Amino acid sequence: MTLTLDMARSIADTVLAKSKELQLKPIAVAVFDARGCLRAFAAQDGTSLLRAEVAQGKAYGALALGMGSRAIFKRAQEQPFFVDAVNTLAQGKIIPVPGGVLMRDIAGTLLGAVGVSGDTSDNDEACVLAGIAAAGLVADAG
Image (cartoon, rainbow, N blue to C red):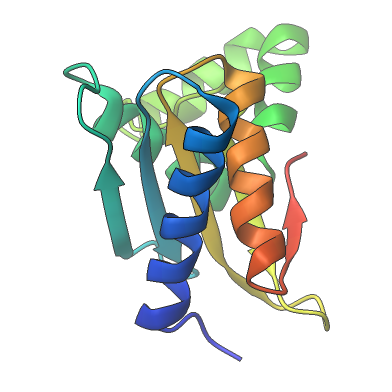
């Protein structure tokens, strides 16, 4: 199984709907495939200037390190020099806070990652989890 454009759009739409349901601050959502290619992106009206980049950095970091950004956040607290060094190698593209989640099919095959930014990291992650679950995929937030 691979992540199709229709799947990526559906995930993004569900993420946005969940944000609206929870009455969160305006968010941006980025859906990447397993190769790290952006497949879908959307930002609600009123998002602040760098939300797109932050959402992409959460998803990119999850793919780059093979773990959800919640795990990267924990690792950054335990091994700050390691995460800083990896982020230097990634040219600053990794955002080490919750809200970037790997997604897999039922067999465990990595399909990509979704990142959200705009509200608290926990709320961002909750929206991602809803989008991945609605697509019938397995989320790995770390």
